[in-house]
Amino acid sequence: MCGIVGYTGSRKAAPLLLDSLKRLEYRGYDSAGVAIVDKKLRIHKDKGEIDNLRESMPNIPGVYGIAHTRWATHGQPTKDNAHPFADCKGEIAIIHNGIIENYLELKESLIKKGHKFRSETDTETFVHLLEENYTGDLESTFRKVLPMMKGSFAFAAVHSKEKGKIVVARKESPLVLGIGEGENFAASDISALLKETDRVIALHDNEMAVLTPESVEITTFEGKEVTRRPERIKWTVEDAERGGYEHFMLKEIFEQPQAVHNTLLGKVADFDVNRFGRDAFPSIKIVACGTSYHAALAGKYILEDIAKVPTEAQLASEYRYSTAAFGRPLVLLISQSGETTDTLGAAREARRRGRRSLAITNYVGSSITREADDVIYTRAGLEIGVAASKTFLTQLVSLYLLSIQLGLARRTLSFDESRKMKEELRLMPRAVQGVLDEHKKIQKIAKKYHKARDMFFLGRNVNYPIALEGALKMKEISYIHAEGYPAGELKHGPLALVGEKTPIVAVAIKDHTYEKMLGNIKEVSARSSPVIAIASEGDRDIEKYVDDVLYVPDVPAIFTPIPVTVVLQLLAYYAAKERGCSIDKPRHLAKSVTVE
Ligand code: M6R
Image (cartoon, rainbow, N blue to C red; front, side, top):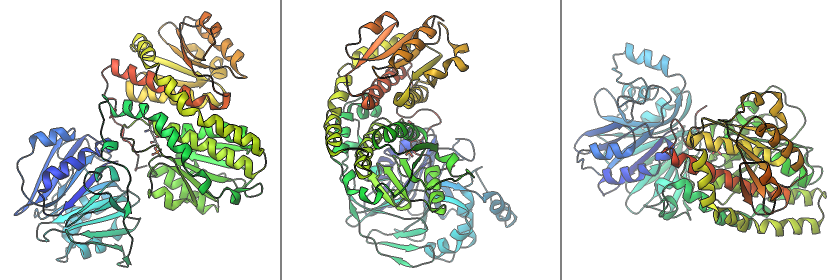
């Protein structure tokens, strides 16, 4: 995944492009570059983060250009492999997000025709193809060349002889256009444009656009005109800034009471649940990746407990290639970005199988909203930290709301029961705040254990996926090797690894599995592992069996994932901080994975 931006107008392009690019840094940060047309095409790139590029940047005048921040897929993260790439004559520059699958054969034939390649990337083939097929007009050249490209892409290009013009195209990689007064913009996502405009048009698959300072013309690859009105975006620049917090992740963790509150106010009710009544579908299959997959796994417990619908969770990368397609489940797709390639592939596969689909996403206008039959929006606001925090919690909230609505529609929940559950849900922002208020205690414990090399996270029932998520947070931001396990599985293998150097985080809240969890805790502490329990407020008894306890507010058992998640997020955050890690931009990771 990479970030791309483009600007054409009357202001100096370089500072504006760098500023917008900085807001996309979460999408990739191993190298970056800009191409600006001044009297001629000028390209400047550098290895590493955007600040490196800014520091080494010469003064380039010019009022239109493109810029890119990279997350390497083909070729090492070097300066040579950084975008933009120019053609042999140095007139055309392009940037790309995605993967060109047939680049090797294209490259071979271009080399035979005398083109000189300067990088190991798949992307560079595109600029040489544009040069080879140039008609004197970038737009028609795009139309000629795009059908030759196999794979996924969001491209942006400029030509030094076509003043003020940027041409962009999209297939399976995100691209939005920003509409200004006497200036226009393009970017991988809205966050890059918030400072400049609140009027945005999402480009769809197989569409391209030509931007000049005065106009934005959208067409399909075949040249059919597309008319689409700009949407007003409510997110503000402040949403995209740290607001006094040391890291975006910490800010986003502390925004959770508000995010949960907003999602509770959201309109799951807008989604016509009656179409999903008792006979609409026999079961649900939830499909997602990463953290969203953990929400999917928790969703299984939540939907089965509240709505009594048989539910399964499957990783999107597995679902899309699985050969077994039994029953006629509703396919529920969860993706905060709405742009994850595997989840989009799963959505298409669901359609191919004739399944009805429903998406839960945080991004209005994202690709998944067009792939799925229905959409529920989480209202987490913009999340910049690569590690998902508030978007996960709001996915859980959406799953609770959906379960209540489905329970009502399928008559497995009475009206009174549903009202009571909604009332309990409304108390969740307070429960989250309760955990945040205890952040100093969590920090102290993180400090105590931050030198661990390995950790286990144990949970049972609906808190088993939360243990998985706690382990994922810990490994991705602190680089401590962490495994999440259903506690009952411990003796079937992992117990061989426990010992005094392996702290265990055990979710031991008071539910019907509490006694079993106590048994598991005794097993590991008998083998000298230090145990940190996450327990229900008031449970003093547990202190006898563990080394440390972090309490969560007492909420109904099915809702405990909400406060427990917040404890685990903070534990990971503070451990990573003690270890001096790059919390918002963990090594090798990108915020949304738009390649397979
Ligand atoms: O945008 P999505 O929810 O589809 O992203 C899926 C995963 O890439 C994502 O949840 C990832 O695992 C998290 N950023 C990790 O914290």
